[in-house]
Length: 127
Ligand SMILES: Nc1ncnc2c1ncn2[C@@H]1O[C@H](COP(=O)(O)OP(=O)(O)OP(=O)(O)O)[C@@H](O)[C@H]1O
Image 1 (tube, rainbow, N blue to C red):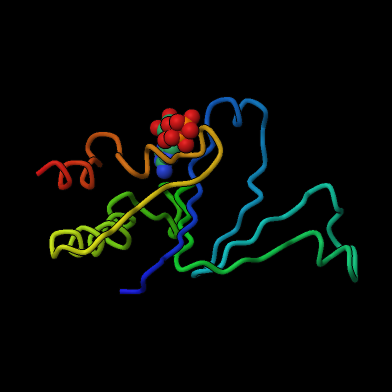
Image 2: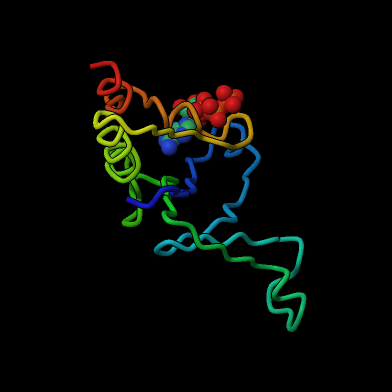
C-alpha cells in the first residue's frame, strides 16, 4: 500500500443548489478530475481555454453526484478503496490515519461515517 493516497469526491447537489439551478462544473474520468470556470466562455482559444478547464490527477476521483449515472461511486467502494487497507494496517500495529478535508457541507462526515445503511467504516471501526 502506498504510504499516502489522495482521493477527491463529489457529492450530489443539495436542495439549495438545485433551487438555484446550479450547474455541475466537475467532471471525473478515471483518476482525473476537471473543474470548469463557466465565467470563461466556451469555444475561446489559447490561454483562456487553458484557464477555463483545469485537470488534476489524484489516486482516486469519485463521482458520487448521481446514483443513476454509470460512473457513480458508492460509499461501499470508497470504503473498500480507502478504508480497508488502513484498518488492516492499524490491526497489524502500524500507525494509520484517514482524514477528510473540504469546505463545510461538502460531505466529509458522510464519507467518513456514512448514513444508514452505509455506515460500514464506522461500524467496523467500532467492532
Ligand atoms: N456522497 C454523498 N451522497 C449523498 N449525500 C451526501 C454525500 N455527501 C454528503 N451528503 C449530504 O450532504 C450534506 C452535507 O454533508 P456532511 O455533513 O457530510 O458535510 P461536512 O463536510 O461534514 O460538513 P461540515 O464541515 O459542516 O461538518 C449532508 O446532508 C449529507 O447527507
